[in-house]
Length: 300
Length: 325
Image 1 (spheres, chains in turn yellow, blue):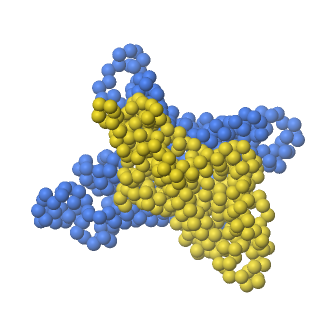
Image 2: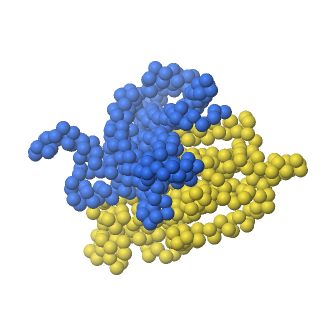
Image 3: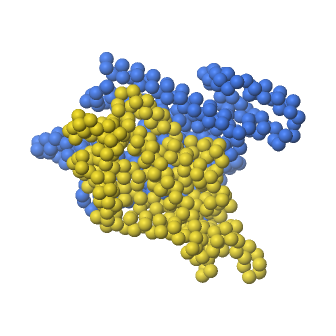
């Protein structure tokens, strides 16, 4: 892993709120970043209002004039993206499925960041035995292949959205922990940390008020990438058939399309979920790249 | 001398990691409600005495730590137990699948690394030019594409619509060559390999590309590059120097990628019904065949851990500037 440098000068006065504010405005500085942010926010809005704007209920069965189940109907005025093998409206599933994708992405990013940042901060700041133990655990997490682990654990715990979130979070904190630790190792040699220590500030105070705001840009970078990985991981687990059977998600849609053999010709069922996944993950990547430029100016 | 001490310590760490992983898995697979006998017997169709007998035969009536110790002892002899589904030793089932996975992944890795490293070095060298700006944006795209979706698109187009390639599996059941092209050795296998290899190569290409590009960017700013330029060396020679020096971080990544590729091919094998380890794992989990699931999972993880160990050693050996602490 390359050691990234912090662009801004670390300082004791960096405030958490101020940093967050400037970080949110950051992706809008380039046109790729701005487009990506708009796409990302659009998906977030659809996630919130999805059930109200979806034309039908995602699992409703539709019938034709003869009263037969409307299997794999091509796109039409009534069903803009056609119907599934089970006679449901693809567009409605796509819209309603956005919610689960956004929830999984954001929740996992939150958990991963909480675990990863704390492990990194504590490991880097205390060093010694604490560091050794935490870093061996991180090494172990790095040795576990992700998708197989997720499949095994979700299958053992019974498929549900929460178990998928739990599984993803249990492994993915590893990268953030390692990178933030290396940041803290260099930060804690700086004068402002030494000064606080001499002034008698408690360890907790130094970690969370002095070190944390300075690793925040790095954390934001990992939040962005974690959202992307978490969403792909959820889609993959769902695609393998271990998703929550009661929740429609894009991965679940592709699983059903593949299972029913509809990928033969029903492009209206297989293309849209993949396009949405790619747009969502791609937009998050591009936003992450803007943060990457901040933390590693050589890339800019 | 320092190197050997470092190597020794890393070896111990690697063994401990593998051991911990085994333990975690043993516990994980025993946390499942019910035991394998319930799966074997179905829903209470056999009398309880028979079930008791089976439990004794499988050693499931003994305390957990005893089971753990005998599990480790068997493993040390290369015995991974019996498959509940196939009723055959796990090793007999897993090993051929491991071979099939290697057949699939080897061309993917070779193509992804060769093209990725070449393109990454090219983009890194042409930093700031239009070709680089557009190139890096395109290179990001495969990273956002879910691998199973790339696979589905290829299947839709080339197998279902155009009928050029088989829709899955590794070999045709009864294959009779009709033309001289089909009579060429390995024709059937290559036809089955083509689509999965393309899908895998597209997916695995961006990481080596981005890493090489970043490494190239960093090398370009180094003092020795300035010096080489001031010496009036040709552009071609400058590029060679930069490429060689940019290779180190790429090397670390190659091992990580090989490890992940072996563990992360599950989706690819699933879509193309490739009879490899990943598909075996998904099936055995779905069939609750835990000894097989456990073995495949452990093999995938072990590959990653051992490769990481090898790379750490190689890295220190290749870059004399690295200090062991």
